[in-house]
Structure formats: C-alpha cells, structure tokens
Amino acid sequence: MTTLPVISDLLAPVYAEVSSAVSRSPVADIGCGDGDLAMFFSRLGCEVDAIDHAESNFNQLRGVKLLARELSSPARIHDMDLDGQFALPRRDYGLALFLGTLYHLKNPFYVLETLATYTDWCILSTRIAQVTPSNRTRIE
Image 1 (spheres, rainbow, N blue to C red):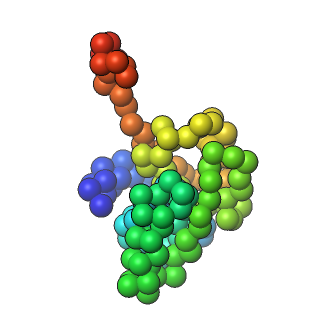
Image 2: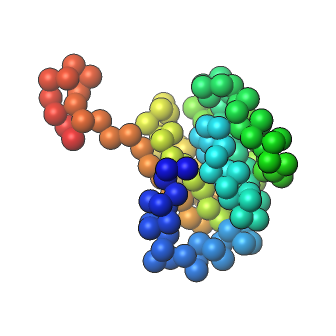
Image 3: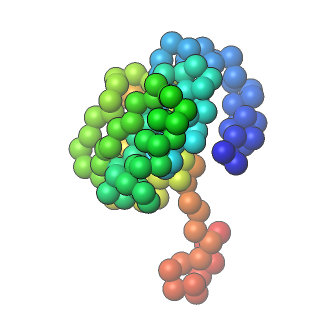
C-alpha cells in the first residue's frame, strides 16, 4: 500500500484516460503478493484479476485468498507461472499493475510483449541493482 501515493502521482496527468479504461475493462495485478492493491482496486469497484505463482509466492497465495475472503472481494485469484508460455485470464485489461516482479523472470521480454497486447495501461516497477553481485562495481 506504500506505493499508492507514487501511483497516484504517476496517474494524475492521465487520470481521466486510466479511469475510463478501468471502468470498461478489468485490472490485472500481476505478481500480486498478498493482494493488497488488487483488493484496493476491487473495493473501488473495478473488476480485478489477482495473479501470482503459488510456487514462488512467499505464502503460496494463502495471503491473497484470505484477504479476498475476509473482504468478501469478487476479485479473481489466478495461479500462473509467467516463466513459461502463458495467456492472461482475459484478453483485455484497462490497467495492469506489474510491480516488483519483472526482475524475477527468466524471460522478461516475453512477459512485456504479452502485456503490451493485453492491456491499455501498465504501471511497472522493477528492482534496480546498486552494485554487481560481487559488490565490487557500483552500477546504480
């Protein structure tokens, strides 16, 4: 939830367009973790697909399932491995949230190309390394 102010600032100049997109097409929270953002958008009235991979999710999707149940959320939860060939649950999304996941993937270009064909808007963040694995070279 700490990313909400950043997302708000990022979307401010295009708020009308993004709002229109999510009013007619669902939101995908890809790499949803415990689903806090998925549930937030669901509470705003958006149709939401919360997507993560149980095998690599830190609690095997139990957190997002519990949160959805406790909030009586209609958000749909999907266990999906993005490291292989995949298709998102729906063909069209108004907004994709793809935060902190890209750097974990074996084939990030495939995922980005897929997102480009499935979604109107995408908010993406990834980890930026400050040093090489040996901590000898600063690359920030």
